[in-house]
Amino acid sequence: MNESTAETRTPTYHNTDAAYTLPNDSTEHARLEDQAAGLLTLMHGQVIQTPLTNPSRILDVGCGTGVVTCALGSLFPHATVYGVDLSPVPARPTPPNVTFIQGDIRKLAGHDPRFAPASFDFVFNRLLVCGITDWPAYVRAVAGLLRPGGWAEMQDLNYAHYRNGRLCSADWAWMQAVYRGAAHKGLDVECGSHIRGYMEAAGLVDVRVREFRIPYGTWEAGERPETRHIGEHTARENWILYYHMIPRLVEGLGYEQEEVERLRSRVREDLGPEEGKDWVFYVTRGRKAEV
Image 1 (cartoon, rainbow, N blue to C red):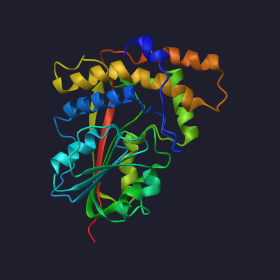
Image 2: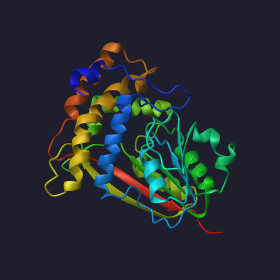
Image 3: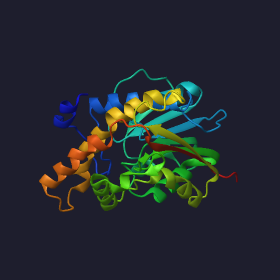
């Protein structure tokens, strides 16, 4: 997407009472697919980092386009795999063991018989930073869905950007507005590094975290070729996400339209490709203790 199109685009969004602030249109679907391909390469072709053995029931929460759900269905063809999202999952080739459900996991868990307590071997989610307003409660709910010995894996981010290893985004006025708006909505924009604590508080054991640094651009691709795709994607797409997110996040906080536009005008410059600039993708896994 070119810059002028990105700035004039009018995205569409889900129509539920959930806090999720990102779009659900075809442009966003294409972004999610490309992001998933980049993350898969970053993680050396391993869509998950959890050592699963013959799971029979798998849940992908906030499944988006269903790309990871389908990958899990293919990896574990004898498992029943559910993908849940607030918006309809776009049509795609789907393994026969995969079922997509439109809904809110907060309302499905414990109420829909397909989401009975202690019924899943693996619960997965990726990049729910924009959608979860009570992470401790969400992680407790996930723990409740797991069978004894079952695993949860959560892949997420902090809205923290670094230049040569030092935090730089805390000084950006628009990022300060993002943090303020997120706090007002109950979002945790540092959930990536907090999930370990949420899992441990929910009683999960063997909690482990892997950190993958994502560069802005291809400056690290010579030494780490696995970063090329996701680095290109991040430098091209991230500013657009924030550009459209800012008005939704700061709504109701007293910002004048002129001030909002001034904040938005800085996003592209701050998040362009730049040697030494990156952020961190956290992969956290934990297991429900055996009885």
